[in-house]
Image (cartoon, rainbow, N blue to C red):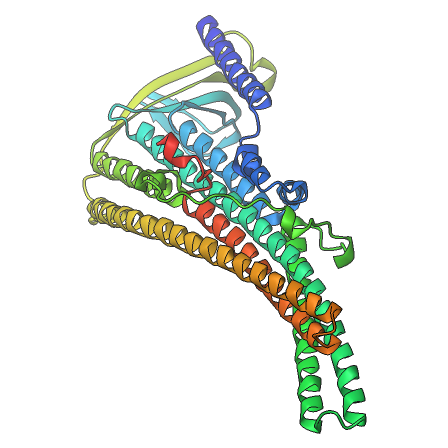
Length: 462
């Protein structure tokens, strides 16, 4: 009796210590999700508004919250699996009234009809002795699944932050395009007005006036498209950041020229794919299925369960804790399944086939990852070249406009022709804006392809 009380006290203290230690560790552990945001990387674009949107998305985005809840659920699954390795202790009382109306014989001793109460209040313990390490492997498999879920969360953060940055860059782009397009509409409206004066004075045919009016309608249509796309992008950014109630005009953004252009490396080492969430998941999945195969194999072996009860038994509730009422038992139960209809063998073979699938998925992930890295890098280089060419074209157009302005000042060029040259300069500026933002977007694609790492220094870290 004394030994049982000592063991029960030690068991309760051990459980209390584990819970307290776990709570303390969680309190002192920094939030790993901040690392997933990778704000140091996004600050390289030199736009505090962008990093503010990403921080806001971290607080408000539902997809990130769902991913975090999935991780927390996975943590509980690990705890449930680990619980299978521990003894199970519970209370299962037995209280009943026995009405015996049949004759009971114990040899020559005859017990007549009787009525009596029975009170049995025991603690019940069972423990599967993990001789083959099967329960340990099951816990290890669940831990591998937990790592896979954490990689899913990291992938969500990479995708979300990249989407926020992309939508923000597009919003900045449409601000500038709309500004240029409004100026184009303004100039073309003035051109139409001057053409109408020329036509009334008989200085131009009606077709020339109609052509200019047609160009005005096209410019206005393009402006309407830009405004519509800006609203769509703003709403998308609002959903990503949880700021859906904000009006378009109240959404902060910087000037597109403020955004820093990052240099693209000439090449990226293929080993960079080791940082990608899908690559890590493929590795973890192979290890998980390998463990599951070992579990399925050991399921054929016998199991050994240690069980026992310790409590109080009496026929009178008032005497339940009296003398000679303590009752205990201890047993050892070996068991083995002799026939299960082939279920265990089918499970073992299924797991082996799943392991082969996991290996093929791993090989496919390697090839796909390398392709995506190379494709994103090639696209970024092309867009970088195109941006540089658009800058050259804009500079040439700017020089041409400066010459036209000089001609206008000396009377060698009409105001109407100068306005058309101004339109060409605005069109060149729009092309430069598009090329610049496309280049910025391509750097985000490279960032995603290498698993959310800084591609400007990635080769140095390999």
